[in-house]
Amino acid sequence: MGSSTRKKKEKKKDFQKAKLKVGKAKAKPDNFTDTSFKAKSIVVNQQSLTTSAPSSSTQFAHYLSLASSSRSDTQRRDALSYLTTQLSSAPVDRPLPLPTSILLPKLLPLILDGSSSVRAQLQKFLRLLPASDIGDRAEFALLYIRAGMTHLAAEIRVDALAVLEWLLEVAQEDVVSCPGGWVKTLKSFMSMMGWASSSGSSKWSSASKASFGKAGKTFPRQLLVLTQFLKAGLIESENIREVKIGGTFPLVDVERHMIPMRSNAFAHLNLFGSSRDEEGEMYIDREDRQRVFQKLFQPAVEVGMANAKKEGGEAGRASAVLAKVLKEGMADYIEVDDTQ
Image (cartoon, rainbow, N blue to C red; front, side, top):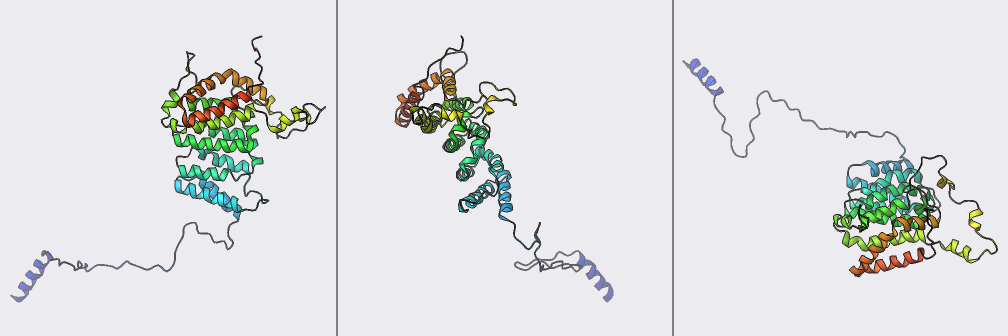
């Protein structure tokens, strides 16, 4: 009897549900195996086993790659901040860790970056580059500047104008004389400011200005940057003006007979390149730029200036400055009839 009762209790025990008490851990099963362990070493992916630190040029190239290709806004901004710090802290006579021909193609697309902090950091970096290295790459820089000037986001358009201001400061002659630098950039201004002509009528449309949304707040700044651009293309520099006044009399047009200062002095002849249209042409001479401006853009600019003066305020003052530059730049222009 005793053995049978014990067997019944053991069988019944298998089907009984254990009562859990509050604050007490659940009992571990009989076949439980402890698999916990303590590591005594740290393993890092892509761990470097070299004893020497990477060179400054290697680090510079690494952060340049992060700034141009990282998907994180914060990482791109921090990488640009590192590059800016390296250039600003370096001695004046020390060459750049990487040539400008490598830096600009990597970083200029950031003009269209969606993060305002990245674009602001880019402007700080660009102002640290040697001005002598920028002129030959003005055509490439203008591609992204024009794309930013006609961007749908108002903040990107404003920052693109800031980059154009910097480019005019360091290489204004190259900006207005490179292929497409004069006509294409002026067309971007006309589209951005709503001064583009409407097809099929003689009236000037402001639809593009209205479609850009916040154009009213940035319109005075657009007028001022357009003024700087027209001043660079239509008004003679001080050096050329002094020569024409008679500083080297009886010599005439001395600068035309001297060794050219630019690297590709005969690029405007386009001897070996593909054929260019009127938009992509190089306008080396001031007279050519005056002719194209008078033919394609002067009526639109004059109508736009008149409307800006009616608005008054900052736009009215900026249009007055533009009118002064335009009057000075076109004062000595003599219209030539191309039909004859």
